Image (cartoon, rainbow, N blue to C red; front, side, top):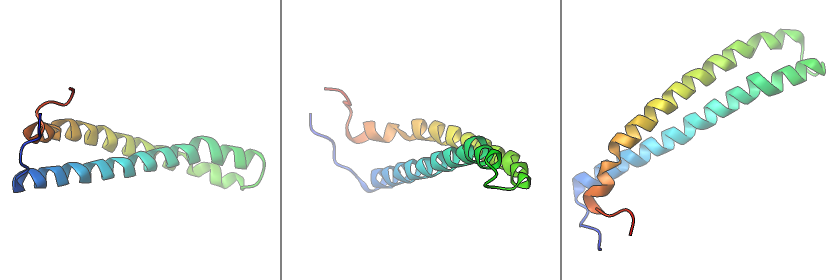
Length: 96
C-alpha cells in the first residue's frame, strides 16, 4: 500500500507534531537532570563535604522543577497522542 499525497495542511500538522516531539525531549531531559541533581548529586556532594550544607536547601527547588517538567511531559504525551491521527491521513496502514 502506497502512502497518499501529502498536502500543505498535512505538512503543517506533521511539522506541529515534530515540534511537540522536540519539546517532549527537552522536558524529559529537564525532568531527569533536575531529579538527578536534587535526589542524587547534591546529597552525595554535601555528605562528602564537596559542597557546603546550605546547598542542600536547594533540593526542594530541584524537586519542584522536576515535578513541573513531569506534568508538562504528561500534557505533551496527551497532545502527541491526539495529533497522531495525522499519520493515518497519509498512511492508513501502520502495520503490514
